[in-house]
Length: 319
Length: 319
Image 1 (cartoon, rainbow over the protein chains, first blue to last red):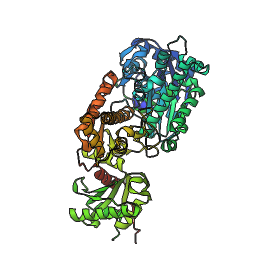
Image 2 (image 1 turned 90 degrees about the vertical axis):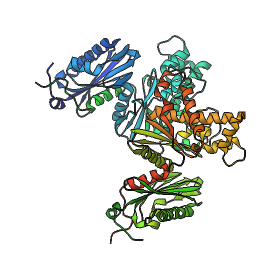
Image 3 (image 1 turned 90 degrees about the horizontal axis):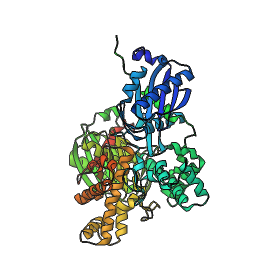
Image 4 (image 1 turned 45 degrees about the vertical axis):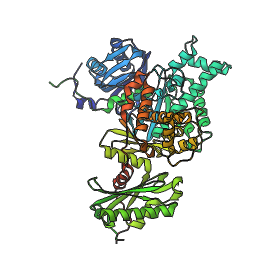
């Protein structure tokens, strides 16, 4: 791998972004002008070594498909679940990773500077950029778990210790279902895919879709879970907007594959909740949400932005 | 009144700040270096004209007591309840004000440029400045109503439409007491002084103090209200920290006259709520709150900062 100075790399045309999920990696190649030049999805390996290997393979495959060389890459960014601290990933349980110095290892392997970010925060940045400039927005991720990323003036709001946006663990149903975090009635117990699958407890590859279908067929347990899904997501939207007054809440994550059945239900829950309150009606929360389009590469695109956002540092000393 | 250019005024030694409440105005004179030179409290008049008059009287009395002339005043700021939009106050129901172009009228009357801000936001800025620099903090006002101001890097976080921090109207008790906003179970129904007085419904000048005394004496209704007060404030702290990850939550407002009986109760509610959750325990919310000292001039001091924060504009044209 050829070494290169930061100045050399700044002139290179390609920024790579990778969204590493529990089952698949999504990779994009982005031009210096912000255009997506190529995109692919590959399976994710299990455990620290396999994750690094999957990332290297995804970058190599992306380069081949898109038609660029690693020497053309100015920067790479990775969005990944778990705690991210200075390039190291901690407690990414869905990847079998307890601790992984991802930035250093990927940089050394590929000769490209890597920046690592929590996946929801990276997706928030990507969603904000793809949607176009707005003063402020929150990205609410409804996946296995529930968390949000807040973007203000194009930058991720991290907070003092990096956990701004952890609205999934606010309890809105005293005495409600037990959450993985140990509390009861958390927003995540209502609208997290993992919690819903557990509460449903029946076999099936797509339990949340099964819940909606059963609810449509009149199953009372499914109807209660569906209501909870819509109410929980609406509660998260209310918390985000009343606390930070973001202009918009963009909803992403695996549950957005439910499409209108999710979006219409959340909107209805927001309207119902505001029905008795002129103050809440004045906030027009139902008009401030929108679902990320199916297949949106927000996560990988945001990771590419994260990679390009900090000055590229020297990974190989001069001379 | 002598006219003066912005450059002239910038050299003047005094910044005035006024915190206009439903019953009293607190006024401070602050030096260019940020030192409080004088402080007084005066009654507030009822209605738009009387409010303007009270402000003028408070400034005159402050000048006399502190020993400065109006010509020494570089800027003035006012914190006032209600919606504030470009110097105009709307819907300040506790002051009998429906609409008041406060900045223009006070500026014209006193020959000093006035900047007007919502009282909770001004107090948040004042609390942040008096406490010393911290990366970020929220100021949670427990008064007649409940609202918060968020300060990041020394600046008020306003949000898109200026209502960031309106956590008082998040419902945390489905089916709970009816809130003035029309919803049920809002945080404000649990820990707002107005809602508590209404729920208690017995005569007395200091109903929340009466509730605590009756709770200590074993009154079951008072015990339930006291628990709600502590739980509601704890819920507001959780919302603020999990959403924005502010370093600290400073609690102010009229209810802080309850002192340790308030603070200890909120701390206990935060500890109890985190008891079953390693995640919540890791946030150490009980260590992140603190009560504003009794008699703290945070509101008026913050208003003085608001007044001084924007470039003084010409209120009298040259020549």
